[in-house]
Length: 235
Image (cartoon, rainbow, N blue to C red):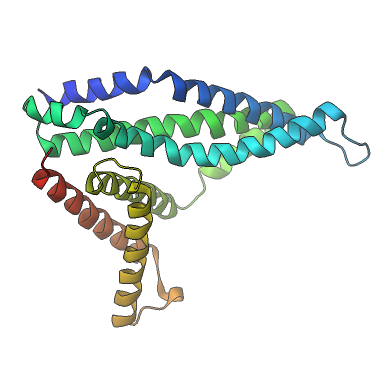
């Protein structure tokens, strides 16, 4: 099976996951309505009962959005283990390394789409509705951000997905993968502190180049562990 066909299969499964799509639409609507109400509140009047109820719902929706944006990729990664899809795919001749990277790429893509739907679109609608100039200035500021910082944030995001994927592989998709994820993160932070002490690098000495190098090494090591375990796993 070709790499492109594996990717198409993953995308098809994600697009047809109706439950997650419904949750995304509901959270996007609540975040948009709640954001509009919050932005239009005045200090000189009491909020109506409806506004109070919607603000409470909005607060719960924000919390639910944070949880969803973490649980969503976690469920996507472990679903194939739970449904015995991994063993069937590998038995059909799919390379385990190909499966690893296609799963990471497809999950990253849909995670970005979920962030766009749940966070970015509601925020843009709120800004655009209240003041076009504010909206334009908001997005204008984003172009002035240091690209090094943006790159570090993207690497951190990728690192979290690689760690999550490795945790799912180690635990074969079981629920304890979440504990393995936090365990790997804690271990990684401790190792980073040890190396910083060895090379006498203080917290104020950390620059963008060092952080980028650290993130790349972390991604390389953790992804290598995940691929090694996947290749040796009896499925």
